[in-house]
Length: 305
Image (cartoon, rainbow, N blue to C red):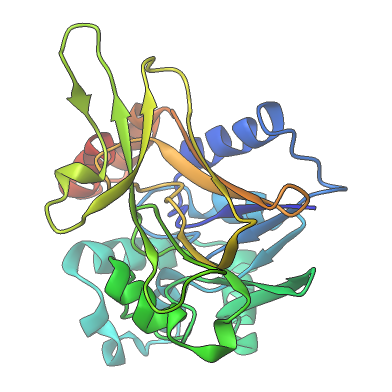
């Protein structure tokens, strides 16, 4: 089986469509054999909440809560004031807009996720737990925490005995990362941000990716030379006792690469693939403009921030 892992779609339909096309055409996704996991934040920030949720709910998938589903739910129930400090002004604007746009069916879908407290999902394969959450594995209902570095990965995952034989996937930060411990060593871990590099014919080196974020330390590198081609970074897991992946965002990347992203875990090969694919940013921005979205929410998509 393969797990196709999508996170932080954020109501960006063109980005989701590009990911689904890549899954089917390039990775051979098949509904009868493969499984989709959606790590929350289907909504927020962009203008296609109903279209995105309707597509996601047609997929055979695990769907878990993100902080934006939680925010919309509280707005719909007039209880947002109690959690409003966790959302900045732009996020709050988008949550209010989304709450006013959602169909009754999608309001009910979010309410069902909330009533079931679907903060995480897990599967078992060959003696290993495969854990999925939006923010972090240790306390997946806490949406105020972000995994940004090795210390965060240790604190929220590697230092806890219950995760000794666990492969975990989270989202939330919108910056792809990978962390590992090995069977041979204990204590320290290897890992960091996945840095994507693009070479340009007119420049010695055009850097896109997390190296532009001074607060994050890049470790893994992935290179590509043509604008239309996807990025893919592959990780073999056979010698790893534990692994934690922060999955790239489908709909609002924040590593200065304006490409949609997702992950694939192939249980047969015991490999994880991080994929980044080009999508039509301008079509999302045009739709946002028609609804008078804040300019900063529109501009950040083209900058990947």
